[in-house]
Amino acid sequence: MDRNEVLLVGRLSAPVEEHPLPSGDTVTKWRIIVRRRRHRRGAALTDSIPCVTFNPETAAVVRGLKPRDYIEVTGSFRCRVFGPSAAKVWRYEVEVSTARPYDAELAQPGDSPVDDVGGGGKLAALIPRQVHYLAPTG
Image (cartoon, rainbow, N blue to C red; front, side, top):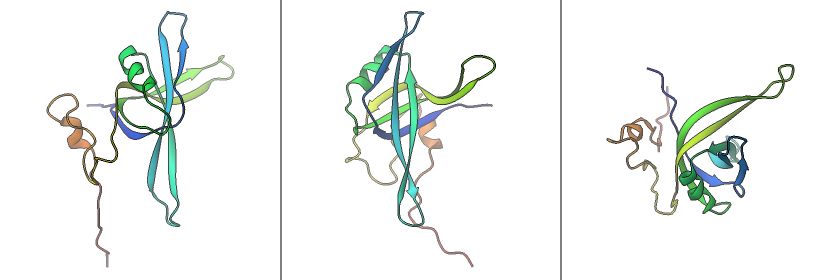
């Protein structure tokens, strides 16, 4: 069975942007900065991941945060195509269904950032745990 589930925990990169649509809906956009594992040379690399929501409750949560605040979001990965047929632009983003502030100071290494998503902790069980030590191989 196909699945499209995304869980991100990172920092809000900048203030949230809201854009009204011709349909009367409002799309709320922001970016989350997520650190990668340390690079070989010791430099920490990051990814800036675009997120959107059409849900007013989710948008209100994100609007209440400041840049550099930690946030946890769940949603689905989307590919959107814009522009005329001769010059299509493909954009990838996470369409967020839930968002909440995340207290990074209370989190312990290896803790799952999700208490219970979708009931029964099914998503939490799928999240890889951090490996603290790998034994050298032969």
